[in-house]
Length: 297
Image (cartoon, rainbow, N blue to C red; front, side, top):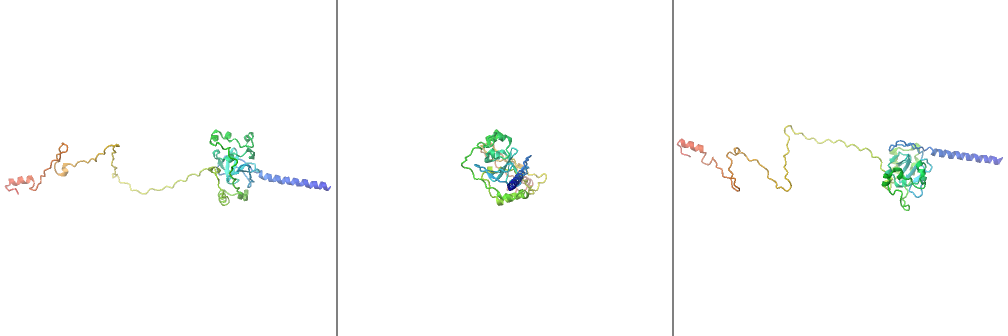
């Protein structure tokens, strides 16, 4: 009777243990993936209740989450998620997620063997599980030509793994911070920065700020009819001798006499002009005095 009683207690203990394990697995099984239209910086429909257990992949500087039902990895200070045939990245385990174009996905993320994908797509299953997916067949010839050599590297000289952001463990679903709080916590508890530019693909740029309008200084406008005209400048062709500036000669009426006679012979000097008003007076005045019988004076 005692043996039967002991067996009954042993069976009850096993049943309770299975229930507890099932409850724990159900808690992690609440992770759901429902990716629709991915908007940068917003939720993708992936709900991870708490900081995941990350395990290093042997021979790779990458971690993966074996207890989750999603393809979640950690590399070079970033979480990487493969869902609905697209790659997303974030600095926190539950987003917000940013879309990563295929041309900017790091090489070591592409080199992860299919075996470590917790939810691989169906077309992955026809490839070797010990090797990486055939991204060239998936993304096309153009991508393959641009990323030649992504599946070849020196296995004896692997870069060190980035430290895990374990400070995020104290921020489960109920205390999960917003985007601004995330940046503040990163700067305080996680000073690590990527070693290579490929570790953080470029995010979408913010819209450029409009430059403020700056009024020009006040300039008085000229009155009507008094607009200054710019003199026309005649440019001589290159190599030609510049001509002297043309000056219009003054009229004889302005100088009070006739224009001087200039000889057409080259080198001839102009004839001197007689001054009608000499020291003896004008000619008309002398003739009038002779008529009156006065001596010219």
